[in-house]
Image (tube, rainbow, N blue to C red; front, side, top):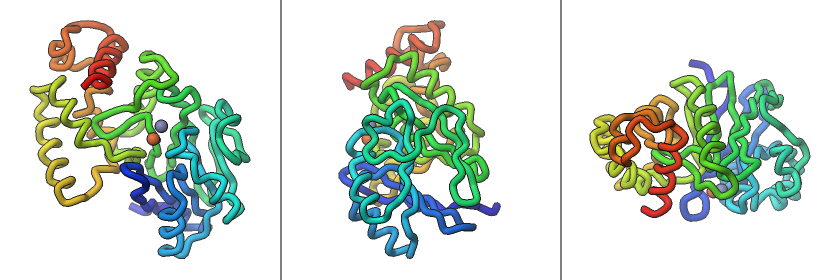
Length: 257
Ligand code: ZN
Ligand code: FE
């Protein structure tokens, strides 16, 4: 199971994760988002890696706030959404849906996933089956709809769910325990969810991250991608309703949970 990239997950701020992606063949190293400069630099130093790229998922300060300082220090190339170029600090390369960006000896596919913000994108490393989804999909959750409609977000989540089951999914926040507390209220009879919550509780008690997750695990347990679940539909009083309506109601309930 040869990996072309190595991923290093870095705890930042209160509950963010930053990520370094290192291309083994060429030494190219990207920071996926820039939540906090000092821990990113510490991780680079520990690994003896040099920062060559920043891949931004969206413009929020806890994702792009370190762009300018890191670019000034490393002279790295900043990649971000063409749709959001005006608010990604220091952007050099603008990318859009389906673009394949050459990163070292591997390539990264751009997936547009609007909803949390209008220009949110995800990065999919095809060769290694690894996705960075920012604040679109969380373990047992999804991002708040700051700039998009429920329908847009549903389409975005469906795009991510179309990735292979085994895809390793890196989410940008450790929100899993709070998400779990909500998820069980809307899908109380989901056995896979019940089992996962036990596991999450153990991990968090020991301070172990619940990120990364996988597409198959989210499909089985995350109510925000399970709009066709009868248990979910019945619990929220939308039996047989269309998936967008079920998703919209689920998101609304979480906002008020
Ligand atoms: Zn955000
Ligand atoms: Fe965030």
